Image (cartoon, rainbow, N blue to C red; front, side, top):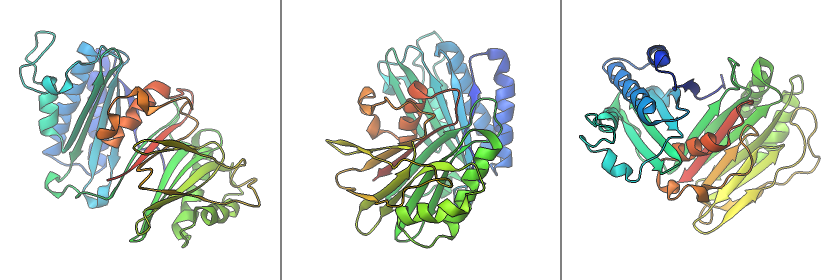
Length: 336
């Protein structure tokens, strides 16, 4: 089932930390994470919440479990709007502290994580990324295309009206970010009906994919969506969108906004649509956002962030631009 990738946990009340830790532990256990990784996870969560209490402002932890081809992992993203760090690398060294503690927190998180990243700006805040794999020795190798998704339900909803569908073959990688109209189960149904159509559609074409989905979701609320395909042989992007899914292409020296068609898939789409083609040599990073993210964002605000895991970029955009009254999605695709 297509649904939110992460659950948001507010981490600004110390009395709530034990419940937060138990809930994340439960998520991991149900997702296939086993001991001793669960014990390590508990330590990481404890260190994250401790840091948020000491240094953070408006602290939040995003947690998501991913199947990862039989080697599941849990991803934790700690976000705050605190004072930030002038020298993040130095703060990873044991014994370094700004508040007279032992200074082992960030170093412990890094040691216990299969993947770790840290991004911080003075006066802006800090993002800490930790992934804990069930079998760390089986971590996936270097992929030519890295996809990181952050999909979060509207507060108060138990299911998400946004969803990411990925289809990968030996020839291409095709991603569809869809936003079902409204919120909750009916919006989620539209996204999952679209996902079912995508899985059986044999063609590569993003435009033809949308045309195939359109009649398949006519009995639902409908959805806006963008279909993005990366062709491994030609090293090109091909993209078609209907509705207000924002797509922004980034290259070393240029930025381009992809233009979508007006309409709602399942209700009304243009009779004539053409997909746009972009060279991956010109644009090696693509970011897609649903309208749960405000449109006025720019990665220039985040110095050197493209050097970090794309999940850090997703979290930074989410931190500064999320509409907290809506489902929210940010997806980054990076060519290695």
